[in-house]
Image 1 (tube, rainbow, N blue to C red):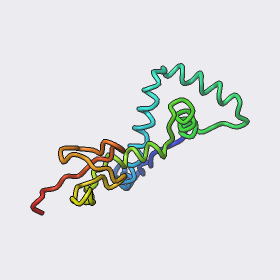
Image 2: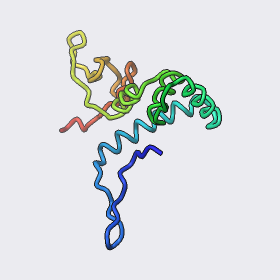
Image 3: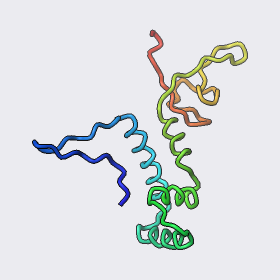
Image 4: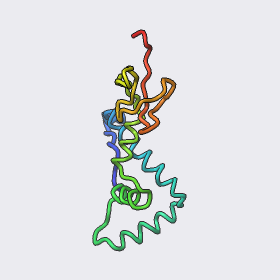
Length: 138
């Protein structure tokens, strides 16, 4: 099995937990989440996935690690890449709107694509970037 976590260490008094960076874990977890979501959206069962994996790896001269194979599977059958998943995750992190000139009037716009939107919008209607609304008195 390909290990994807950091093992704990055995000590005299029990076990010492591995030190991890929570930010990196969250990024990795979100990547896995989006990969799993795309897989689930296919509607295929684990048995069907295994059959596809066996068929695909039979063409390969060497064994493909599961995580690498899953990335390829998602790209081929789900139409997305891990990088596209990361971009989608980044768009979920709210960003402050940017003030731009709209025919002589300053209006708030998307910090990612520049689209103007309603002050009631929680995300950009064009690129789906989450918008961070702060108290106007700050």
